[in-house]
Amino acid sequence: MDHHFQENLSRDDLSRLVFLNPDYLSRLFKKEMGLSISSYLIQKRIDLAKELLSTTRTPVSVISSQAGYDNFAYFTKVFKEKTGMSPNEYRKNCQSADRKDKR
Image (cartoon, rainbow, N blue to C red; front, side, top):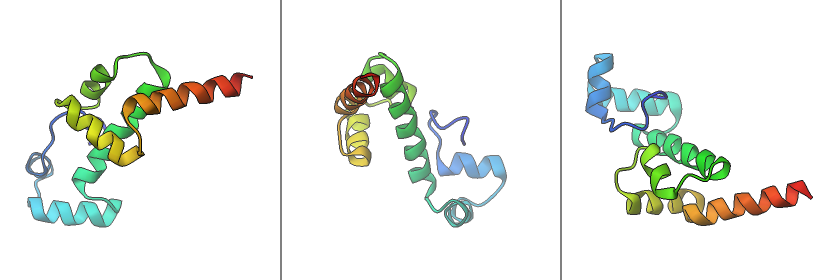
């Protein structure tokens, strides 16, 4: 999952790969990781987006796609839910923090 989180992965896809019942896989994953499969994938995608926003000048729309989101508006909504700010606000905060660190 860590190498393919940007792809459209479903619980059924994963269960076929590991030869487990989808419900059992979900329970096992949550027990071991402390997160549901979908929450884990969202966290991985948001972490990648945060990294790209803070270290590149890549347009936010491209970053949303690189993080595995086909729908830019949905990416923005999820990003804001998870971080408390929009992707552009996050980038601006990172840039202003970098400027302060360089002083």
